[in-house]
Image (cartoon, rainbow, N blue to C red; front, side, top):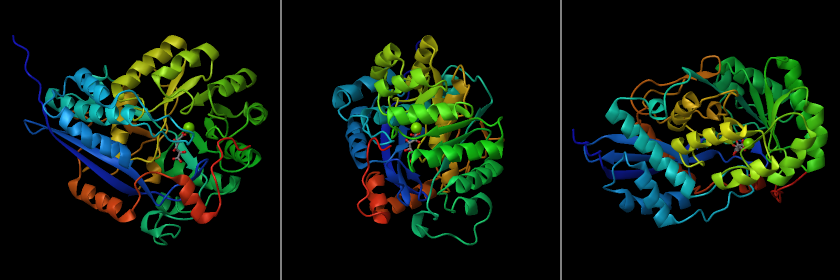
Length: 433
Ligand code: GKR
Ligand code: MG
C-alpha cells in the first residue's frame, strides 16, 4: 500500500484579540484591562481547519505573518520539516526569557502556535483526539488549581476599576479587591465554591513577604491541611528572605514557586529549605536543563506548551523530568478555551500528574469557542474526546474580540506601565525584598 500524501497548509490566519482581564497585581505591576492573545488558524488544501492560541504580542504576530509564505504547501503531518523551516528562517532564539514573570521569546511561541494547529488538523484527519496523538490518555479528567491574585477592585475591560453591580456568584466576587490576607481568603472561598478546586496557589511578589506569608497561613487556617498550597513570589525575594520564609512555610506548602531569581540562587534556597521548589522562570528551555541538573535548581518544572515549543516538546520535557527525577506541572497566563483545551490534552497524556495544573481561566469571562466556557467539576476538566482539540472557533466572538484589540490600543503586555497609571513613578525591581 502506498502512503497517502498528507493534507497541505493552504491558508494561515493570524488574529490578535483582546480579552477582558481584571486589575490583577503581580511582581511586574498590574494587568491591563485587556489581556492580549493571538488566535492562529491553519486551513488545508482540502478545507480542514486547525486552531491554536498563544500570548499576544505584535512582534510575534509579525513573525507569524512572515512564516505564512514559508509554511504554505507543507504537509501538516510533517512537523519535523515545519520546525526545520521555521528554525532556518528565524535562527535560534534571539530574545532572552527576560526578567518579568511572563515569557516573550519569539520562536518557541511560533513553534507552539503552528504545532498545536497542525495537531488539531491531524486529529481531525485521523478521527482521534490530540491526547491520542501524544501517546494516549493516562486520565479522563485533568485537575487544576485555584490561582489567586492580589487585586484592585474592578472588573477589567470597559469597566476597568469599576464593577458590574448586577453580577452574581464568582462573576461578582472576582470584581472585589484582595489586598490583604482576609481578601485573599475571601477570593479563595469564592473561586473554590464556583470551580471546586482542591489546591490553591497565590501569586505573590506584590507585598512585602510578611504579608504574603500571613496570607498563606490564613489560607491554611481557612482550608485545613488537606488542601495543598503554593505561593509564587516571581523571583522577587532575596536568598536570605526565601530561606527565612521558606522554612517558616515548610509545614504548610506543597511547593514554593520561584522564590528567587536564577538557577544558582534557587539551588542555594533548595539546599536550605525542605519544601520542594518549582519554577517557570529559571529553567524554561531545553538549554537550561544541563545546568539545572548540575546544580539542582528546582524540584518541579512548570511546563507550558506555549513557551516550551508545543505539545510534543512538552512530552519530551516530561521524559527528561522523569529521567532526572524532576516533577512536572504546568504554568499558565491569561487565556481562553483553545489554550485550555491544549493544556487539558497535554495534562491527560503526561505519564505522571502529581500536581494540579495552573490556569488563569476563572479570571476570564470571554470565550472564542462555539461550545462556550469550559466547565470544571471538582476543579477538573474532562478531556475532550472529539477529534483534534475538540473545540471549534466561534467566528462571531473572534471578530468581536479582534475589534477589542483594535480599540484598546495595546500591542504588548506591559504591567509596569499599567501600574504607573495607579502609582506614578512605580518601577519594576527584579529583586525587591
Ligand atoms: O498573570 O500576572 C500573571 C502571572 O504573573 C503570569 O504572568 C506568570 O507568568 O502565572 C505566571 C507565573 O506562574 O509566574
Ligand atoms: Mg510562576
